[in-house]
Image (tube, rainbow, N blue to C red; front, side, top):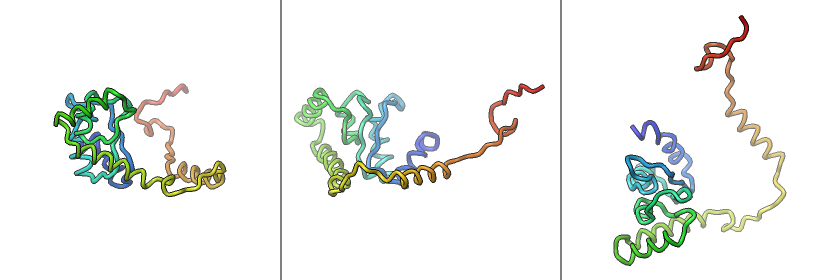
Length: 163
């Protein structure tokens, strides 16, 4: 049921757009933070949907940085010394395979290689306002929905003050 009700929109976005990054949320599913869920971040997102980008946590989402790395997060936001120390300790004691971190770094660097800045894009402080206005207008037109204001058009009763 979770796939049909809650994940379908994410599946469509991932499969059709293949975004560069996805952020795991603060929420828990069946008692596990989403950022610590291997099933959600690796099995569903990466294996089933073919996501190739990087996964980052929402700011201070989750509670266990080692579980977050194992689940499939590549980047902990905003990142802090305590998280770093726990990850290093887990690698040293053998509870976190260093190859997990190698994979995380590879995904982050692959995104960096795609960026306009890395490719030498010449930025400008003079945007094409006319073209941007037209793009915004087209997006607005394509997203517009017209509704007739009558008793049957809306799912909620409309207050009729005329008697």
